[in-house]
Length: 276
Image 1 (tube, helix red, strand yellow):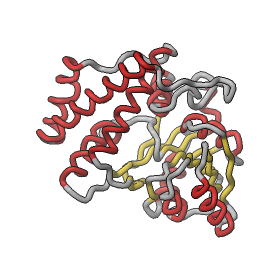
Image 2: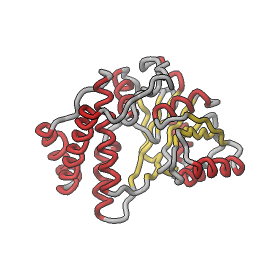
Image 3: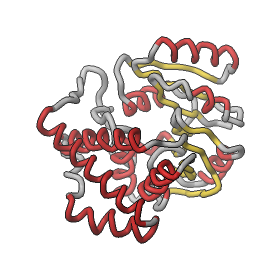
Image 4: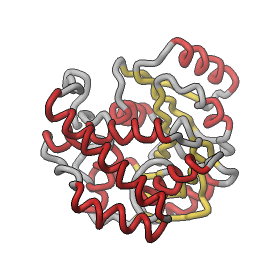
């Protein structure tokens, strides 16, 4: 199967489960970004066990940079993006590949697991953001390399520390590219706690501010509009607790956005990579 699975990782040892869930004879490109010693040792061990694994490295933390670098080093024209905190369901890769057909994108279904009622609230809220509408978020997302000719000449904006797939999806939607979707092509995401998920929301806020400064995005929805866009629809679709949590999540994004606006805690060093 002519697919290169791209996985960006810095310090997440769960990548071992991710790689071992691959059930097809495909290339696996592990893109290390500022990797820890433990990760380097683990990947070295996994490469000895699996000859399909290849690695590439960038010396700074960036999912966008890691994705771009891995795509350059991949052998095949079909790129499948995967996260190190997810595992493939058996048959998922084959379904995504088959579903690509004549389109340039094939999307599967991410299932957020949970072990208690708090993690279930997070899982349902993540579904609201990612799984309840068709998009080009990753993972799991399979696309052809030549898609960049349709979406501005590049894959992921290297200045974006977070929200890189949201900006990618924005350009895909603007180009009116068809996304093949198979809800039975499933991957499973590890359970998320309130603390971890809200930390992600804060980071997404930082990313949204960087996007705004680059003039590739605008300010996120404010608290008033958030009532009609997140709170009320969340309550209607997912229940009262999820609706409240979605609104809190939106508040945290705005906090991250304004924190970056005032303190500029994340800066991008353009010596590392250009859009092309």
